[in-house]
Image (cartoon, rainbow, N blue to C red):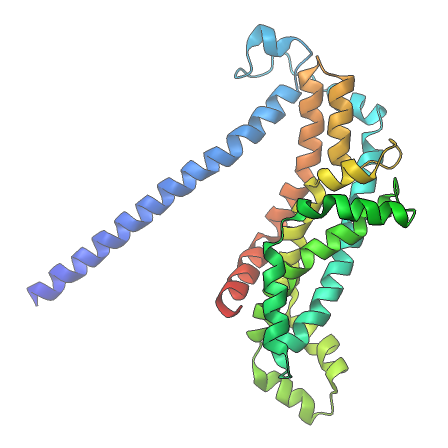
Length: 286
């Protein structure tokens, strides 16, 4: 009896130590992620030379909020709107195409299925920027240079392998009994996909939207290569534009950085539970 109690106490002690270590690591990582963002926010609320006079680690004194109206007057919302447009269109196309590809790979048996799936997974290893010059030549030949929609192809194409991988794994977790019941009720493959499989894959789709949305939102190399004029540039290019215009005004540049990072942070906070669920499903079943 005493030995069982001693073992139980040891297990409780180990569990408490494990949780304590987990909390310490979580707090440490929170500080690593939060401190740079708070640094940006506080220093964006300073006047031009306050960082030099007061130091970057002190709270603003006085608090100066005019940097944000100033960057709005300089057209930040134009860059912002173009980024929202191209990222939204890219995500919609990527989610539709990857869903159509993942459904047969996860729910059907056919010849070359494993070969096709292995090929898609292999494409995940291709570095995106290796193809920059060939895609630029192709875009130029098609007459799409300096056109915002020239980014659609690269954004969608390079997001698809990971998207198909995650969605295939997620759709594999849907019980076969649901599909069999729908077949008995007279559902064909198309109705089954749109009425059952796709709605049940919302967590996986949300995962893909966040995971790929962040990379598309911050993408710089393709946008900088394909877009030349200010009325076509996206938000990451605006950072370079504002840096040249306000090179000596660091608080102004930090204001632009805060506005560019805020949408993705809000999106992640809203959908973080679906992100974790979808990634775990893809990891286990993929």
